[in-house]
Structures are given as C-alpha cells and as structure tokens.
Length: 469
Image (cartoon, rainbow, N blue to C red; front, top):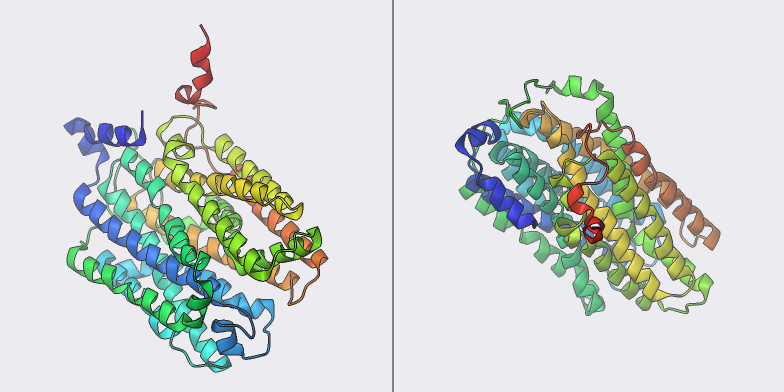
C-alpha cells in the first residue's frame, strides 16, 4: 500500500472514529492550508540562511567576506558566526514559542515570525567594515528566531487538525522544507557562482524580500485555535500527561530528546557548512586529487544536493515505518548507525580520490539522515496523553535546547580548525564530528518505546518471505 493510499484510507474512517481521533476547532482543509503557508515560509528562511554560506567568497574575491573584512582574513570562528549565531537564535526562538502563542495567539505569533524573516533584507544592506558585519549578524539572528518558530508552529496545527495517520504522513513531508530550501540555495552556484558573489547584496536582499508572500497569505488565511484543549490520539488514551513548561523540563525524557535531536542536527547540518568544505580541501590536497578551489566548491555543492535529496525517498522507504506497529527504537538506532557508516565511506572515497564513491555515499548518508527525521518527529505524537499544548511545549524545548547543543558543537569544531589549520587538525575536527554525531543513535537507546510489544520488523516489509512456499 502506497503512502497516498494510506492517506486516502485514513480519510475514510467511520464517524465514530472521526470523533475519537480528529481534533476539534480546526478543520483538515484549514489545517493543510496553514501548514502549506508555514512550510513555504520556512523554506524561504532556509534559503536565506544557507545562501549566505555560498555568497561568502574569500579574501580578495567577490562576496561578503571581502566586503566586511577587506584584505585581512578572519579566523574560522568569526566566519562561522553566520551559522552558529543562527543556530543559537534558533534555540532562543524555539524556547519563546510558547510565550508568543500565549501573548499573541497562534495566528499573530506566526505573523510576527514572518516579519522577523523579512529582517534578512536590511542584513544584506549593511555597509562595509566590522561594524557592518556586526549589524549583518544581528539582523540574521532575528531572521533565525522567525524562521525557527515557523516550523515549530506547524506542530500544533498538525495536532489540532489531523488524525494520527494523517499526522504520520505530514510528519514525513514537513522536513522536506529544509532540504528543498537547501537545494534552491545551492543549485545556482553550480552555474553562475562568481556572478552571484559579485552581486551578493542584490541576490541576498531579493531572496529575503520574497518572505512577504507567505506573510500576506497568513494574514488573510491563518486561523486562531485553542492549543490547550485535550485531544485524544485514540480511544484508549485516557491519561493526559503534564503540559506545564516546568513539569516537562523536569522530565528526564525531555533531556534525552535534547541530546538525540542536537546530535542529529550535527550529523545533518555540519556537512553543509563551509567548515566541512575546508576539511575536504585539506583531504584533497593530501590525497593528490589536485582539484582547484573552484572544483572543490563545485564538488561540495553537488554533494550538498545529493545529501539533502535523499529525503525524497522517505515516503516510499524509511518513512513508511510510521504506518507500522513495529518498534521504533531498534529501527532508529540501526538507521543512526548506518548514517555514520555511510558518512565514513563518503569521506574515505574522497580521501582516496574516488569522486564517484564520494557522491554515492553522500546520497546514502543523506537518505538515512533525512528520512529518519520523519520517524523521530512523529514519535512524540504517538505517545499516549500528549495534548496539542504539550506537543507544542515539548517541541519548543527539544528544538530550543537541541539547537543550543548544536551551536556549542559547531563552535568546538570551529576552534579545532583555525585559519590555515594543517591536515592533522582537519582530521581531528572530523573525528570530533563523528563522536558527537554518534550521540544520536546512542541517545535514542534511552528514548521510551511508543510501540511496546510491537514486532522488530513489520510483516509487510518482509518482502523476502513471498518467495517461500
């Protein structure tokens, strides 16, 4: 049965099941419209975030690095600030989500977030010099708050307007936003990279201005709803778990999820950053590949696209786990381990001069990494007693502290490799990257199983049994 057949089947439940499963106050059509606008806004945020990584250039060449720093090369921590300040403020934004909803209601909290995304426009207009760079960073930090809260605001909409099976489907699709945004921000640099860097302010400002479209749409079509009411996930769900921020903070499972999500972010996002490209440059020089700077940039851009494109297989492969009654924990731990294996093979392929191996395992690593995200994000929805309010608070903590975890990891990796770092330091940075990333599958061993008593492998996925008579 395909994902779309499952979706149609879930829509044809009897009236009694609808009453039990479907939250009140927000229809499915309203929910999917609001979800679509929120996802579009998040995609534009990702484009504006990652676009600047490719528009940086180097000292003496077009791009914002020369614009702000002239002829003096800044250290790695300073240039990585465009990334770790974003992720730090994503953490801050995640933690203030609940407060914004209470003070402004869901609709107007979303509107404020979209206004923050528009602040990437003045960021692109900052004057040259270190003062301009500080203003550049400040406006991008506000962009980060807006963009992050948008994807978190999706969760209460899903919890309020959809049945459990529908939430499983949309939990697979929602993560596409980051990957689609990454591809949009990367593809142009395969063809006209230098021209884009020459006109980096026009490019960045124009991209940022597009956020006005979802802003207007949400003002027109967004709907307020009660996020605090109890919503049963199924007829046997009779206990409501605590939904107060303080009580959720005191739960050990909250902090297990913070480590799991923070480590997953490291393995998912660091390969897209300039710090990873610098490591590839050192490995290329040591292996005798003899690639020029432009060739390495091109190869890294191709790798980025292949890496994030793996998510498009999720609904047909790894994401189907959401529709089974099989246990979640063994599967997630296995996929997490396979991510590390594929990532190691990818780097070994590059180090030993096989670009084809590098690309193949980049796609496989991305397939494992991004496809498992849908299973992870759906997990809290599967736990009995989780109301829309609790889901919103829980995700704000998971994302907020998870991004703080990621930010600290990003800074540590940047400190390991100062400007002009030798191959040994670059290998040390990659080793630290693997150690931190390993906390994802290790941490998930401590997550509570939501399918207790379920099978290890669903019967429907044991396709090899069909050959037996």
